[in-house]
Length: 145
Image 1 (cartoon, one colour):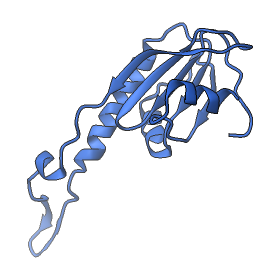
Image 2 (tube, rainbow, N blue to C red; image 1 turned 90 degrees about the vertical axis):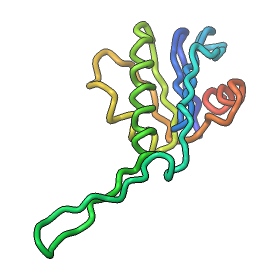
Image 3 (spheres, helix red, strand yellow; image 1 turned 90 degrees about the horizontal axis):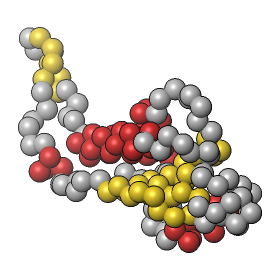
């Protein structure tokens, strides 16, 4: 990211992927931002595919013209459920002044499916990157400097 983001006091930065989400609140001001963890979520363990669904794919059609029905992608279903959980948690922050969402492109798309229509949301930016492996200080440096 070439330009830094200016965050007002009370701005929320959501950093998420399919496994964890950090809700970071700017407790400083625009001139001296200070991100602090307001809440963290971890997805439930995502077991091996063979442990999630062992049924054979169903069949569709009649007579001799039958084909297999696509098998459920249980990992994707778990990631979609976690995206919904992240968005529901985001909704609990009712007094946010600004919102920045940072997530890998695929998970960002999954979260968008759960986001309600824009109301009074003051989304400043969406960043399609994975910052969940960084410390809060490193996230702050990437976003603000």
